Amino acid sequence: MTTYIVLLGPPGAGKGTQAEVISDSLKLAHISSGDIFRENLKNETELGKLAQGYMNRGELVPDDVTIAMIRERLTRPDCANGAVLDGFPRTPAQATALEGMLKELDGTVRSVPYINVPSEVLVARLSGRWTCQQGHVYHVVFNPPQVTGKCDVDGLELYQREDDQPATVERRIRVYLEQTSPLIEYYRERGLLREVDGTQAIDQVTADLLAAIQKG
Image 1 (tube, rainbow, N blue to C red):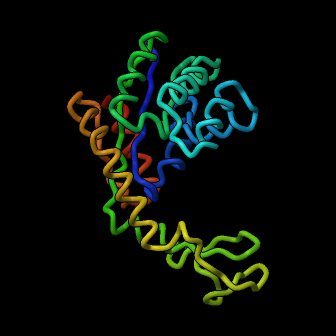
Image 2 (image 1 turned 90 degrees about the vertical axis):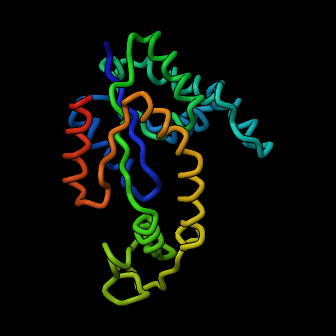
């Protein structure tokens, strides 16, 4: 039976980076819901046009459109051995739809690793980013500029995007946790959830995620 991994984690947990590393290690395709959306919109596929119509009207894209995009992606040859799913499912309803979809593909969700990071750590990580007008990015803790407030490359003033400001970051994290807590419980009840401490060094988080997946 084909193996699928659902990787969960809040903004700032390093989920995208870990998904790529895990998919390389396990020789599984990395399926990012964000990438799939962008691909369908850019290529103006039928599903992309359908999604764009909802977005143009300021409406949420319905689950059935998102699920159809995921289904199409999972039928491609690089997913023959399974995939690491990043950003989907987001709700128990989507998780149930995924189960049905995978049955058709003779697959199952083997493990659901959850990168758990306290909210205050996430805020510190995400709200520490500063950028110059040319797009060079710094972080006050992890990658500070040589001169405070100035870009190392072009000397331009650094500014903080609205998305990176503490109040916005806190709201994003709160919304994520509120929306995702039912999904976390859904997988916990099924014995699939594996929590990993996301405050550790990146390599240690990777090692713990791989160990959790191997345990199934």
